[in-house]
Amino acid sequence: MTSIAEEIRLEKEKQNAVILAHLYVDGEVQDIADYCGDSYYLSQMAQKTEAEKIIFCGVEFMAESAKILNPEKTVLMADRSADCPMAHMATPDQVREYRDRYDDLAVVCYINSTTEIKAVSDVCVTSSNAKTVISNIPNKHILFIPDQNLGGYLAPLFPEKRFHFVDGYCHVHNFMELMEIEQLMGAHPDAKVACHPECAPRVRALADYIGSTTGILKYAHETDAKEFIILTEIGVAHRLKLDNPGKSFYFPETRPVCPNMKKVTLEKVLNVLRDPKNPIEVPEDMAAAAKKCLLKMHEWGG
Ligand code: 13P
Ligand code: SF4
Image (tube, rainbow, N blue to C red; front, top):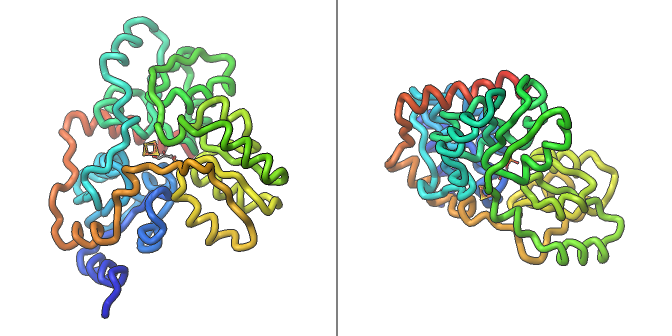
């Protein structure tokens, strides 16, 4: 009997489709992807691909970014309802208010944002390129939206600038329990602590390393330590284990699980290949403005 992974492979080839998966989706979905990585990597792959169809295993803002970068391609989501709540935590009205208040303002939006927000921002960032992108910005005032945790991590690296924030956060990273992390550190005193910048400041303060999902993978692979406490979404465990068979990885007892990323299943990937319903559509005028913001990130992000 043909396995579902094999059925996906055959269907994908027949349709000249490429499968992009974020590292937070289930391991078995990561395994069938052509490209699997963090938000920046996936955005780069979406920009480069020559396939006619992009199947996104991730959340809406990722698929929308792929569509904005490739308006001529069909972009489909394995689960059309997978959305990132943080993407909706800033509004164009807030951006307008700040623009009225400060003449020398750059609006920097995290890629985890709606197309509507990208369309009114100056440049986009991901957690892996934010430092490089911001170092290219001449303005003194920076409105960083929507993630105040990533923004709060970046602000002290640029003491010459004044950062402004809105009340946005990722519910998966923001609410990790300090006590659970301290218990893990007590039980594994030699473990290095690697944390995503979407975590709250009190959690970031415990970290030996702070970086994007891919940054954490690289750190775990290149650091000599044998044990790591990982403070990001549990999906990265799959790749950490594959890449580092001799090392151990511990996650907080209350598992950091993104319910939206976990909506993606192999069955849904096969379904959307066979029955390409609800392709991603972005209104043209908004897409053009949002594309400028994404391209600026690719230009400055390196
Ligand atoms: P990165 O993929 O940039 O590490 O971001 C994490 C995230 O929360 C994606 O939704
Ligand atoms: Fe959004 Fe957080 Fe899920 Fe990433 S992990 S998609 S930021 S809710």
